[in-house]
Picture 1: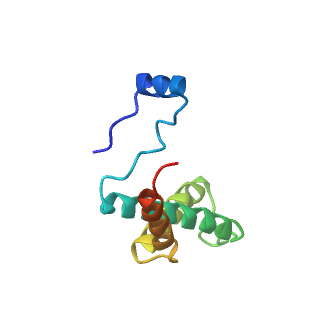
Picture 2 (picture 1 turned 135 degrees about the vertical axis):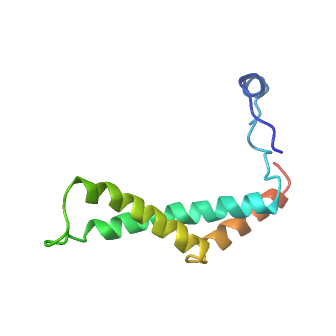
Picture 3 (picture 1 turned 90 degrees about the vertical axis):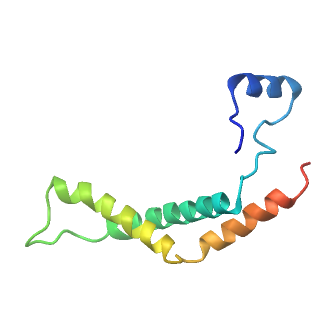
Length: 107
């Protein structure tokens, strides 16, 4: 388990001129994979929000405050499911960089 960075630890690190977060690592590959998948999901959500911004409301059944509220939830679920299904390959790239960064010796 990754230790929590408390105020005392951060203050001590600042006094010593070190970065308390610099040497933090993921406890397991599963945690790194989850972080990479969540990053890809967030990226997809931001992209899809821009994509759906140009889509107008259905004149027959659309409109109203409910549509705007639930549209963002629908986009969030779309992006989560896309990332779970393999996404666009961004999670794999992010995971590779996380693993590479953790294997490099600290400066």
